[in-house]
Image (cartoon, rainbow, N blue to C red; front, side):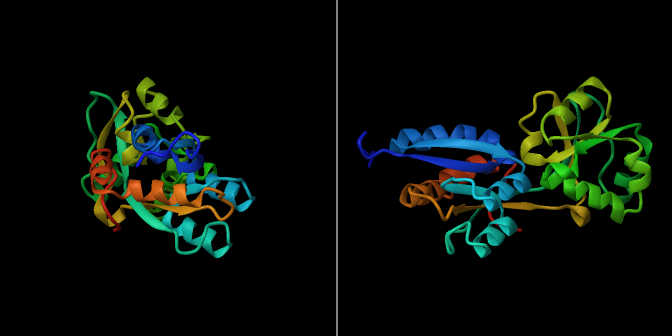
Length: 242
């Protein structure tokens, strides 16, 4: 039932940037269905978690499942309100309509990286999950020293990496698949090989200082409804947990 104007409220949502495209479609639907308003702030999940830890006011947070657990533990998210929303993996992308390098196996992935003149991904310091993981993966594979020489980091974990690939300054980039699928200048090569894949599960929780917990809970319930989950799946956000 749609609330009257006098009972409609506005909630503030802090959400991972990987969800920007799909939430940009879903939030207006929730607002239309309920009459409530949702003010959304996007960012890297590490940066959003830090803001909540420092006491930023909000009603709903959507970050990684691990970070929601940490926020619950520190009392920043209400205990028992965590709900897993979806997950996405890390993928590689190239300039649209350009040849796709071979990343079909770990060996092929390694050969491709060492053969291209430049790669790009989010600077791990920006707090983006994909950038942090790819940097650690390079270390595990023993090629970080070589790859750092040919890596053009995106300092804010935003769209610069896509511009670098589109302009030819970097041959291949890495990001969460749900983000790659939204970029008109980039084209998904494919997910990382399963044995070195890393999935981020996004989870929602109600912020402990929220004055609109009932509406926040209704929004989270909306996100896990079957029709919404199908729309997320079409945007590279898999159903359920790994």
